[in-house]
Length: 249
Image (cartoon, rainbow, N blue to C red):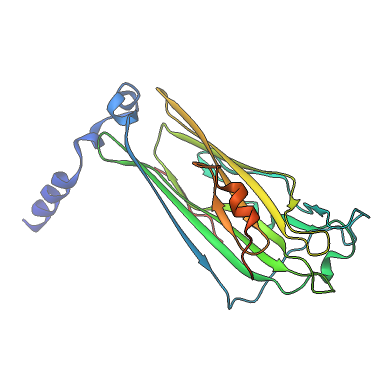
């Protein structure tokens, strides 16, 4: 009798959608139609964490003009590829470092600053068909041996949680612009911009978009995607100073 009650309870909690086979899903627009997408963001900083930095392989930078800043790391990489998150990102970083001297002499780093984005999309059945969390992080404030400059290192973006339902595909990649000096030649302030491109598709529709993030050597982080009109103002007023879990359901 107890067994019968348990079996009946199990039947009651199963959605009618569970009885649809793959062929039924392919012909069901309600399954593939997105009813809502919720995006959240929160920012944090591990001020007390010991900096565990991965400096670029090239130890001595080339001779460059005073105040020049270069990217000593990666310029582009893939974050999510269709149905799974990239699992090789533990050593994929960009940086904004002086274009001269020994980069290992840059000290006094702060951070890492972390900005975490979460996005969840539901279909018309109320099912969460996409659940992704990705993290943008970087160290900032590094100074040269003369105590000058504010640089950026170990800038990275990677998925920390990713789950997607059958029939959907999601792609995300990042491209880093050439870093700039928005300070002075004598006291450089590194600035870097990153474009995160994404694509979310089903058999009936494909959505594409991008986010643009601005990062500065004094620790500033801005999502400048919706409104770039304040960018010049922000730059002109500098402030003083993993395990990937992948599911395919």
